[in-house]
Image (cartoon, rainbow, N blue to C red):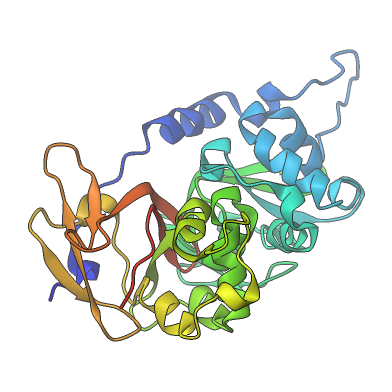
Length: 314
């Protein structure tokens, strides 16, 4: 049995790198409209940065849906960790659960101004909502927040500072709750009382979650064809089935071996994982459920989600 946590990971952040370069070379102020006739132009607020930088438009929508525009405009000082639009892939729908989206947005905000000068590697700060954020500092510069990479460090605002990051700061269950293709999966997790499993980081600093899409779950469980999964259609062993979709270590699609390899799940049974060397496609339990990874490498605070097109059965 292979421990995927020991496998190397190769990063490909070209698009994010260009954004970081643009913001570093020109400064975020280049993206903000200012009154050139004003002899002492005011810096934008943290809300103003989010609204004016086009690469942060997805965050802007989430902030508005959460009803926090006024707070970030008038309050402070704040530190905002601003995920780029690429970090929202696959796209979330903030309207699916306003309470959760408000919590997620508040998890990106600290109610004090925090710059690289204020931090040492491994320091933690508590945001407006959610668990404490852990910071990585390299060469006296803020480099990571939880699993997210800081691509632009410390854009000054009139009521705080904005750090651009390349991932959402969100746990797996909240990510599934706000992602249209995973909403049934999120519901089953909650109804099976498995929230702790899908919010926790486990023993190996993160988990890998194979999340069946809504279509896959309807195919497997919607026995009356109603287009919904009623309570009596949820298997009595749903907790075991859900835990069979979780590995207590983190691996990304490119880490999967090219020969069939078994790995133990939280449920206790093994799944078999294989990656096609030419196409890079990953399959779980080939010859059985033959579940294809259709949405790979959705990074979350407590690991990574891979969307799959079939339900795995222990």
